Length: 80
Image 1: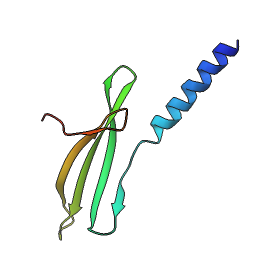
Image 2: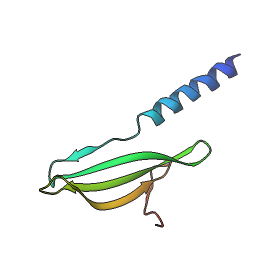
Image 3: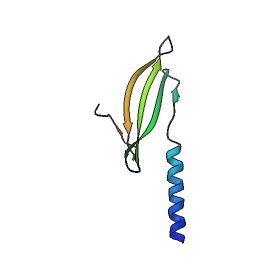
């Protein structure tokens, strides 16, 4: 019974942590924004796709950079 409760607690913590993964965050110095969205790589393995952009004078997004963050927090550039 204790093993079952420990497994359930771990599952709840994991789901709560993955639910808080990224939305837009402003960078006040240079007017750029970064938006990160989780995506599934394999069963139970999620990475984040992050896009850095700025808004031009018409309010349109101009993409500056696209990168991914793996489940260990390491950044990498996608092979697109």
